[in-house]
Amino acid sequence: MTIERKFIDNSIIKLKISRYLQKELVRAGFSRVDIQKTPVLTRITVYVLSPGKVIGRAGSTINTLTETIRTKFSVENPQINVMEVENKMLEPMLVARDIAEKFERGLNARKVIQNALRIIIENGALGAEIIASGKLAAKGARGKTIRKSIGYIPKAGNVTELVREAAATSYPKYGAIGVKVRIVPPGTIFPDRELKPIEIPKSILNA
Image 1 (cartoon, rainbow, N blue to C red):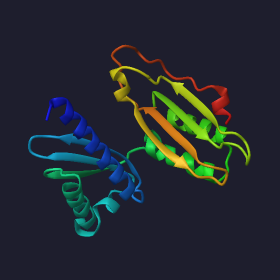
Image 2 (cartoon, rainbow, N blue to C red):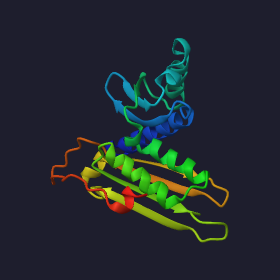
Image 3 (cartoon, helix red, strand yellow):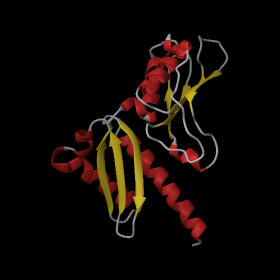
Image 4 (cartoon, helix red, strand yellow):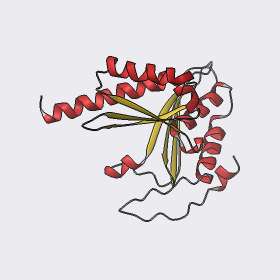
């Protein structure tokens, strides 16, 4: 196996593990997962709102997850660490799900997005972008896209790895809506620029 092929396979396995944990840990408030492979073990750090639901009684749940990852994804010596989310408004997956739920309740899409952006920035983010695509209007209306951003969100280069990103899908009665959220967390340092304090536009403040 070539080095390039090995890198590709590792990336695919990491994606599959992430999707598996996302599905299994919805009730625990799954936010994201960080996977680091070392010569001795594969360290899997899971960020959730409720760590207790991941660990389970006497460690039963986390033991089951560990064994499944070892056998289903052929990962040698996996070790799962559980971290509690410090601020859910700085976690793209949790923000995207919250927005998706509000769409399903019929709330105004533009106001929901603007309000979410305001709260994200007020919680210290250096930049945020929310994109919603699909049936955002009443029955019979054509699908459209709403894209709102504030602060600095890099779109190219290695610095994009500093941006947290996640997506969720909403299923209101008129049709599916895809929600994508990007957030630059507080304290992020970009080597090519110095970020200035963010001034929230009045249109977002008044949402």
